[in-house]
Image 1 (cartoon, helix red, strand yellow):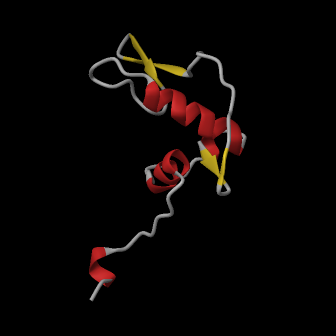
Image 2 (tube, rainbow, N blue to C red):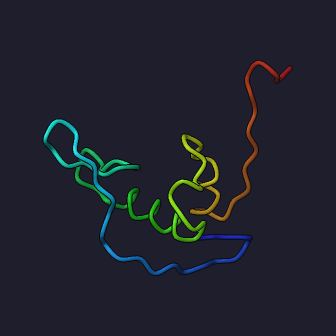
Length: 83
């Protein structure tokens, strides 16, 4: 993970926060991939650990996560504001 422009290692465990939906257990935040992939949920956990809590993650904004994963900067644009 790249944080503040530097490659950073964050140690996490494999416990994920769960909720019950209709009697089934599901991860509370990022969902397990349709193919059973857990990398998204574990990456989110590492990012939450870095920020101090899950609630500190900007809900719905994936751009910061892509920047942290790749180390590449990003810039967001609203289509209505681009001329």
